[in-house]
Length: 63
Image (cartoon, rainbow, N blue to C red; front, side, top):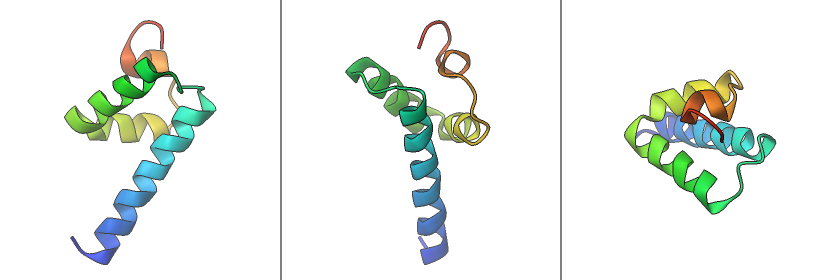
């Protein structure tokens, strides 16, 4: 990875963490859902965090 790619990746991760914090996704089950989506469909989670979508929309049902 180039330095630019690393920087973009870190910025995306920070955006996701801020989104999770703002939506009070701090229980172990919530973090597990985030990790699952992050590693299986990272683009979906990145877009959701960038556009501040509700966790229900990302994970389906209740957060």
